[in-house]
Image (cartoon, rainbow, N blue to C red; front, side, top):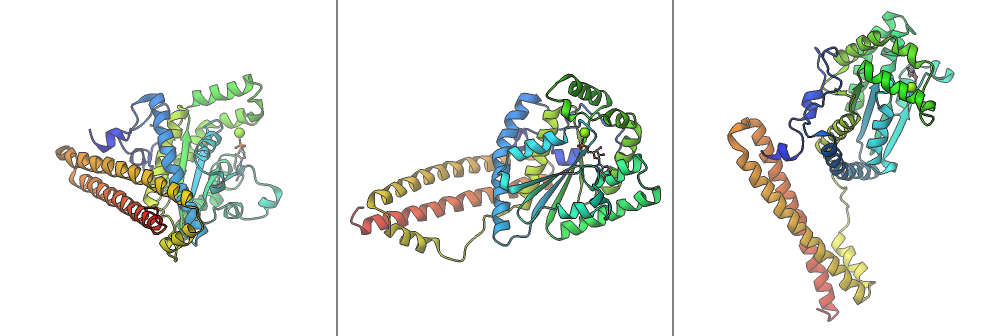
Length: 370
Ligand code: AMP
Ligand code: MG
């Protein structure tokens, strides 16, 4: 038992759920919960915990965008009716600052959109630097519904897979990380969810008379989705195919993959060109002695908290070092490197706070109040 066990996942969902060239949708159990064995209640608790981290990472990305950073994150959510696309979008968005996310839902193209290339409306909706864009349906409808309903001829949709791959590779090159989630429900579960919509006055508005005709084309859609996952899950922009009969699992898996992705993007708080210590001295001149004392007290509390964090991270690193023989050497080296980095960064945070504490104590002393 080491890092991984207490992180809640028995295996990394990014590895378990990522689609490759030989991805087989037919094989997939839609009510499975790959990598998670602790059930629904633990999933909720862990998801909430992840939410705090996700929220900080999103804020860092946003802060970078406000200070000249170029990066953004695009989250594409696809799935058949009732798969839970809207729920995932709402759930994920509830964990971060609303000004940092932009949701776009793509329905049947308007007459205006029809006059343009199918990527035209997509390009207009891409997240600006610092933002997380969420697409509820996307350009993939142009190789899904367009193919199944024969809205265009096969030679037209056939070319789109490569075109989409090139488009997404370009996005990644220009600083947008692309994550794609396919929410896959079972045929029975979809039927039950549609029935529930019909049975509940508060859900009727979600039902469309088109839902049953679309449902009758189930097999054609599974085939079209298989092609999407096999042909457009690239190194630059991978697909994660999520069993979605358990809504709590789909949300947990997406939250986790999103969090891991942002951890890897590693957005740093922007630094400034001026000297905070000099500004601190100037600001202190405008503070009453009482306020300055309160400010010193506040820093004392932060120092204590930082010391606690520092202890915890050191303990975790020591624990990770003991995991030992069972883990493969590369994975172990990665874990150790990550731990070392965490130890260094909490130590640095503590040192910074101690210096701030010292400056404030000296400022107070200068007033003859030491
Ligand atoms: P909903 O997500 O339930 O509001 O439904 C949106 C509808 O718009 C679905 O039936 C999609 O198949 C349809 N749709 C989305 N994108 C396209 C597209 N590019 N071409 C045709 N229909 C689309
Ligand atoms: Mg619908």
